[in-house]
Image (cartoon, helix red, strand yellow):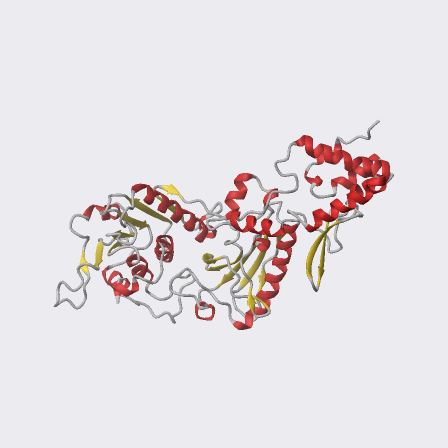
Amino acid sequence: MLESLRGLGYAPATALADLVDNSIAADAREIAIQFEWKGPDSWVRIVDDGVGMDDATLESGMRLGARDPRSIRTARDLGRFGLGLKTASFSQARRLTVASRRAGGSIVCLRWDLDLIGDDENADWPLYEGPAPGSEHLIEPLERMEHGTLVVWETLDRIVTDGFTANDLIELADGVEAHLAMTFHRLIDGAQPEFRLLLNGRLVKAWDPFMVGHPGKALESAEYRIFHATGVNVQCHVLPHRDMLKPAEQQAAAGPAGWTQQEGFYVYRNRRLLLAGGWLGLGDGGRPWPRDEAHRLARIRLDIPNSADADWKINVLKSTASPPVRLRSQLHRLASETRETARRVFAHRGHITPAAGTRPDALTEVWQVRKSTRGTSYRINKEHDLVATIMDRAGPLRTDILALIRLIEETVPVQRIWLDTAEDRETPRTGFVDTPEAEIRDTLSSLFESLVTYRHLSPHEARERLKRTPPFDRFPDLVAALEPKD
């Protein structure tokens, strides 16, 4: 059975997160994880300063399914099945040692060793007292503590495989750090975090998926309470478009899995992240929504109580969730509104325009989208100020210019743009991003002249209109410097 449980599907990061859950439930204020490279003898250790366990409690905790998942848990308890410590540990290692101490008590230590199970045919309960011979030094940190618990993984056959090197362990630790920073961000962030989390002696800094308080966000809703459910709350977020973020912010906001994979619902239980991204099977017309580029900026925080695990079908790995049928309509409505806002921000590169098409007193859009029963097409707007003034002055070239415009419309490389976006996981750069200032100034000057000379706007009116028109609204200094030609 133990060998079978090793295949539940834990990754090193999710397995360690389960151990952190146990430390939180034990009221730990500091949790330290250490990776030590020693080739085949490498080990991983997690130490916390929680209340600790006595001998009877430790023996019960080392038993598989030690607690009934239907029993009522305390508010801080992040477990459910009584399996996390064992299954998470065995998924990565063949030897699990747990040592613990309560205040005023002595150290107690028990060990599972999968390689030794079956060696003693008379042993009904194959648990061993104390650390393995030669590993006594691994539990020394507990000797200097008044209370706490220490967990050691050895014989890391699922981690240290053929060809695995010290550099691979460093890379693994970096991935674990990113996962823990996301999973526990609400518990380790702020001026008074609930606990300190360290990895190889370095403080793990929280990663906020919602960029709370960022001035460029299009949506940061109030917290909604879901009807017909106790303790279920939702907050909707639409992150700023990439063009409105600094390079460092872009990289950080993408998250461990990247922009597209991080979109969707973030399900929390007791402020601990269970599920990061995805749309919980919600969708339209019987088809679930996919994770796609158009909605990559949508992220929704969803809090559930730890008494709702059965209703939400939380699995042993704490990696899947499914909302109860009675709540799906409310979640669908909130998600639809958030997705629509995110789509508009994405399409307009950070600027949400009214449904009518443009902002008040702004120039009309250059491109028009036409939808019909035959599909979607894209046309250059002949009413755009620059296009219209050129056509008015075109004279005998008018026919050729119209033919050129028509050729451009019919040869927009839609499929290539889609393919490049899918492969690069980034939209092509437009909106004068990374364009030399001189080129932007030339385009602005032509538009400004058309507005003043041929649309008969005053210079002030022309500048004000350009300031409200994407993408020129991102270059207010260039717009302010515009003056009529002599």
